[in-house]
Image 1 (cartoon, rainbow, N blue to C red):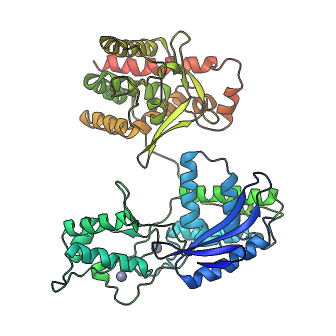
Image 2: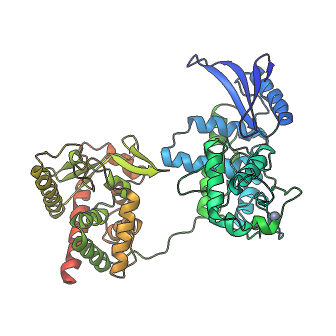
Image 3: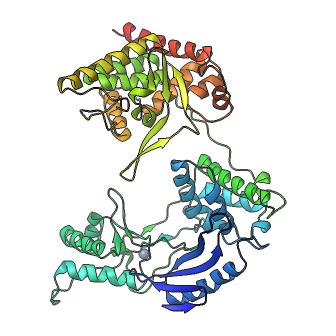
Length: 504
Ligand SMILES: [Zn+2]
Ligand SMILES: [Zn+2]
């Protein structure tokens, strides 16, 4: 370990090096500030150490030549993003914005630079693509098993992969092909590869993610905008390299990137790093409107009828999707205490999301907490559902808890439906009756039918929990639900139920 006055370099099991520098004490929290970074080899580590020491000695006060990478880091730390937005935005920053603009000085960024970036992304989302044909080389080491070797086959594969990681041919964050693909490409049994991968995971060299690609362990090293170039011994056939196919980035995605940049540069302006926001003079591509027609009330009613036939809870779930316009996770997060049948109100306070196998009850209180009117018919359906739960629980001598979930496969209703499961069930039901409808489509139905029925946009947006003027205005009303939302509730119920009787 090379000790320097205020920083040090530490080798990691993956073969990379972690550089850590002491940068004083945070004036607010009184906690130590450490600047950290991970690089591939010892030489880069010394360069990085010098850079971080310089950054530390300059203190946290922004200097004139602060880069976009630094701005994004400081902006992301203070941005008010909810869990899923943060995940999305940090992905854009890591994959696209930082490789493209990270090295630029904030004050040198001008509108035309951003316009140029947007134009390039519109042609191809791969920043290294110039429009000319090229081969997308994949970082797949060659795994040859030698019969003369005394080590078992899996050990040989494991050693070869470990060597590729140690030598830097595979870097932290690099994805490995799936076991089946690797086996097909290099003619090695899946069992052998699986054993080797498990062994490397146990050693901490590889991270196995359930249902996703296996990664080389360690913090992702940003490689800049350049393309990875294969070294000697690379074999395109065994690695499964393919010619590059351009994937244009969607206008809405580019608008999302523009949104992040606008926010970051606006912050830089507030912090007096720059005088004007370059994003204001840049123009992202125009968003394409969704032109898919909303499902008809008859078709929606058909799916609800089929859902009811299969499972009364599923029928109620889908009914609530269309009459409340609530998101799937918000419905899964609904608890007994959120239902106010006497007042004809439902309180949407949580969004239940499952991400990377983790169950999160996102508190939407600050953002999307809202009260929705429900009509008497819907109240009756919920009452029947609650009675069913109550009866089932009474048989085992248990009362329904206030925090019991309305939709649950668990006897005590302590765990809600997984939103993915609900999506799957709804899609399956719609398929069975030949209607194209999913939960998002249900919300689309709610919105378009309300607008077609003459309800104003602001109220409709509020019902759907869309952020913006409408929802904010509603929150400040003394009566949490304006008259028009009562009418909206009754209208949707009538429209959907009417079609169901018309259909038989
Ligand atoms: Zn190749
Ligand atoms: Zn391309």
